[in-house]
Image 1: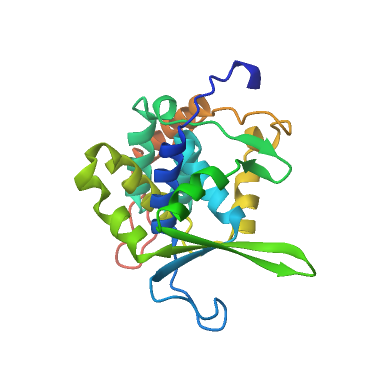
Image 2 (image 1 turned 120 degrees about the vertical axis):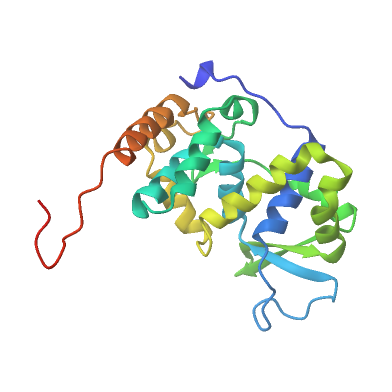
Length: 236
């Protein structure tokens, strides 16, 4: 039940560092005509707050990420690295130690990012803009600056304990490469535990469910494979 979920809150500094690393991993090249004239120090852009929120959810909920990795593995059973990473996550204490719960809002997992992003903006690591249409905000854009990329790429040398976040943000982005925010939202809603969480409640873990699925997939993967046909004959 949602009331039984232990809610760990990240500090403003932790949120800011996680956002910097996630934006660095997810940033795309700015495009002429779409992003307009930008200062030379802009090196990448993340378009749409919803995409950033959905990526952040998988960083903050390792068990849900493991479940998604298994879904991808079922689509491509030759990609054993997906199953191996899911097992690495679920065989450790990571689902508990790394979880920072998010509330379920009207459009899924959401947390106000302004405080964390303000730290990055104040330090000259990030710029934020809004795209307006008929006086309404239709899209948030996050522009990574050269100083932000330099810090993100050198941060492990300064703070080795952050290596997990560097690796995990890259893994999450690679998992959903090319998908937009709306597509990610629909994908996360496919899990009933997520979709059925009442609005205003914290999204509950699915660690036990994910581990059970992993055991089932490992059992299937260990079964002998059927022999390939030889000399035009059907395999027996």
